[in-house]
Image 1 (cartoon, rainbow, N blue to C red):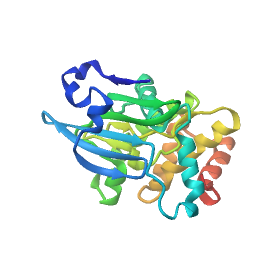
Image 2: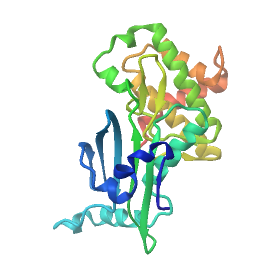
Image 3: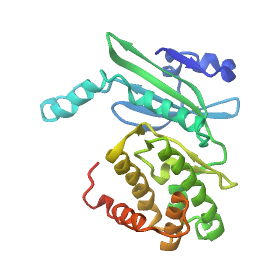
Length: 259
């Protein structure tokens, strides 16, 4: 695949019209690792998040000590679907399934002789939103409002149920990847690890999504609120014996889980 600019943003072609233009952008750096970085740029008063992925850093002097890790990084460049591609495709799935998410402005990647060279994803900022983990860390008063929590929890449960009904698992469903606006609407973001599964693997990944959500919920919500989320997710008023068994697996998921 080459480069794709959302037609609604044709006037921003000078900034987002090609990979070359996107990699030439300067902005506020938010995150950075050997293979990717995220910057934030502001154009005409609107903020955009630019995720840029490369082949990774060169081998360090002590490369022999880290040979396995760098070998894996090199092999990743030959994968048919790259992380950046997974991320924009998963955001497109969310939008198609009616799950609120960030709007894609531009995306694409380039390969040479079958090897991934670089890629990028540009999304428009969801204005007036914060991630749930930020609310938890600062002890936001809304988390003490049981009506607000019930509404937000029900929306997350409904969206998660839609994902799982499509045999899809997010695989990183942390509170930091859930944004909420002033009206209590929820947005799912940052899903490069999401994928479709089947059979026992699907159930395992679905339970991992639920366990990941509960990992943060147990720090600030009551047992009753957490149970209400699961009942909303299952669209039940009472737990069945199968639900009780599933809850035991979910609550104990991370005891021996390394993934």
